Length: 243
Ligand code: MG
Image: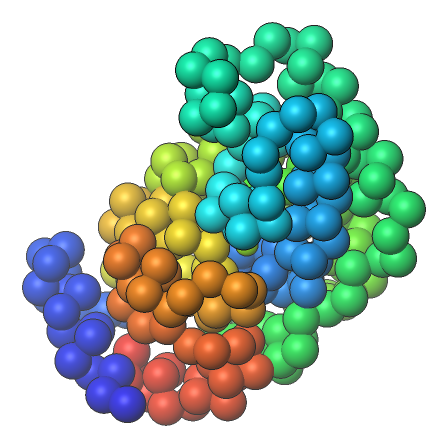
């Protein structure tokens, strides 16, 4: 695969003379953790019980939005109006209750090895997620020990507007002290890709879910890999091309 061409296209589009890679911004669900099947099951179950037509595929298409945004998007599409705050609170609570009955989410295959490689290259790994569970930090530290600085994690606690807005990625750049041509994004969801691209970042997709590759490239991903393991296996080649 000719990564050079994709990188040149990105630089041209965003008016960068050079790439000076210093950081890799990882999305969390579906990238670092194999958690999306659980989220898809829990959301579709709870929404269906509440009278929405909301399939697992809908969950994947909305991945990256906050819970409230997800519910409002479904409510607008089906009933032509936003959900009430009471409906949002009840649905979010019900979803969390279902989710909490599942076993802890496992690490995505290839994720630990890739983050380690990134760190070994002298780059800063960061996490940019729409998730906001209270145990987020513990879960990250126990699965990726010593790899992510607590200061280098952006979650739904930190931003008002989540993905697909660029805000979470822009905040990550600010927190890390990086410019757009100094970081790349690794995402699995179309709205996450949209957010990375909107922040002006070279955005790579790892297609770890059921959506077609073109959904991710249409959202603006410069490269689409079939899995995190595949991206991990190609890392040396990609890093060489990014230098
Ligand atoms: Mg994701």
